[in-house]
Image (cartoon, rainbow, N blue to C red; front, side, top):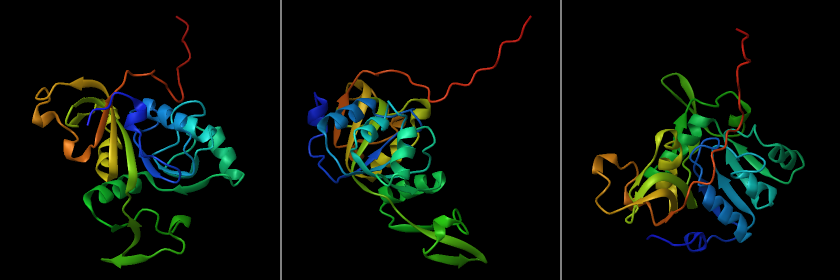
Length: 232
């Protein structure tokens, strides 16, 4: 269903919900949905995302507003407030190797409850957890991930919910779209039905329950690295 407002698109998200949020760094994040979620004031959220944005953008907005109770992520190095809340005991954190996080999301969307992976074996991640040996190699049991809601970002989408991502925005978004009980897609362009060729569709409409068209807010770069100029 196409929604005309962020408030409508986010309806039903309440305190204590588990939410997946697409993006890698600041690429492909549903920035308008995140701002809208901040404005709802819902709290005690469990958020599953590759990282937690930066201090003043992306999921960092929810963090600064004390709306996140637990963060499941693979990378948290660009957010000072994240560090402060974690060290002070205000924020629960589950760190997951990046490849494992991707596979846990894919498994959740595919209806696979658990799988074994060699990643994390012999590290603190594996302490107190089930392992098994296959063909002489030890593997760690990981559970698939699902969520009450998945907030994702696509470049184009049609009124049925078929989605197409642009370049590297096709990161965690497709996997999360499949793993959310209710998937809410923010798109930059709302295409007419039939405009998306079937082979162009990255996420089919069966995975998307709500869609909203929003203008792109701004292009942020987490850490700009430039080369010093060379004198002629």
